[in-house]
Image: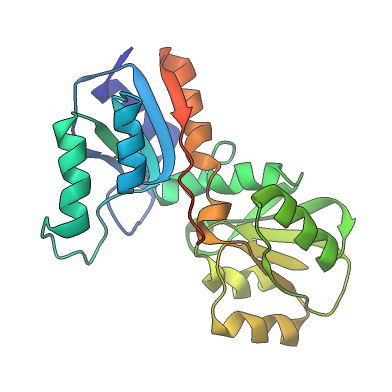
Length: 249
């Protein structure tokens, strides 16, 4: 068992939360009961995840995508009211860490994602150093990498092949990081792997020869929250369960 304050302090320190300029508040977003025995992790604080946490009698939930973001008008209506109502009625603490959970060098989304493909990061790139770049275990082709991504994630990525060069240097950043593609190119990558693609990236891939892979925002960010939650659960002797909520994004 741990107190709510102990868990928040541990997470803030572990993830170096104060270092990041972010799109919303990191840390405790909704206050629940003061003591925690059961911890749920998930990608997004959706109603489905909260309902599953209630069913498991969780005391706290740790997610990558929380409830509050810059630009939100602050009205507690509709979907936000429904989610908050469930959390408050069942006294469930909600912890949310966005960029800090992407960036942790061992437990974060990028580190956990890269480990599944044996990519060894030796440098960072992009805003606040969020992108990782390193060597593949062995050179591969765009077709082979696309197939490996599909096997791991259970969905076919969008692939822009580039010039067909062997892929030795891989850059990656999970989620909606398609805007880092130019920085990945400048970092010397042969391929860039992220969650989403927008209109410009296909042109950059064709014109520079660097392959681009969009794996899905949710699909690429399923690994950091459970890794961090498992670490904290082990430290405090908590029960932990990762709950996957299907999302085609």
